[in-house]
Length: 166
Image 1 (tube, rainbow, N blue to C red):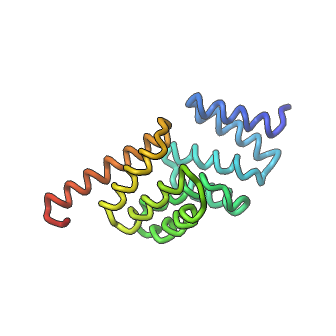
Image 2: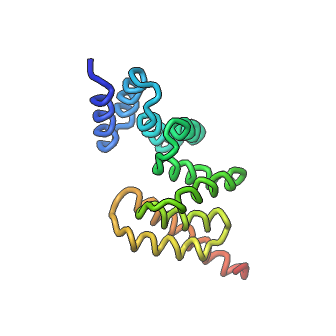
Image 3: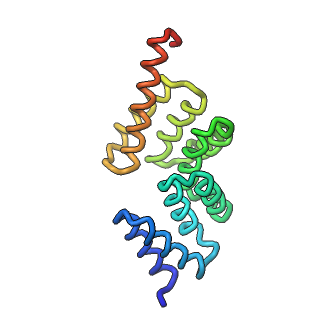
């Protein structure tokens, strides 16, 4: 039998290989051995989000944060999930504000951009996302997600301008 650390490394490998089933199976092994492993709980929640199981993902990330409140990537992902649920935007904004007040050279500028999204300030959100993407300059999955969000914001901005609402 493998230990929790070995199972967690296998889960990371499966995740990067695009195998959510194997990733989940390995994470469940980690959690059998270490039920309060915040990183495993968070990664399992991230897989749930990837599979479209948003409510389960939100509950999982909240559980991970209750164990390890300084798990900034988890807080950021939770805020993103909550941001697009209109009734939970205030909660999303609160999580983003916590990230924006910490020095995190990658997530801080994105958090500031998403606060503008939560405040329905589309022009400011688009501008801040452009700056954040240019500052980080990383070609990662995360950057791709932020670029897709920027495209959505620009399309919304064009639509609002065309309707005379901007």
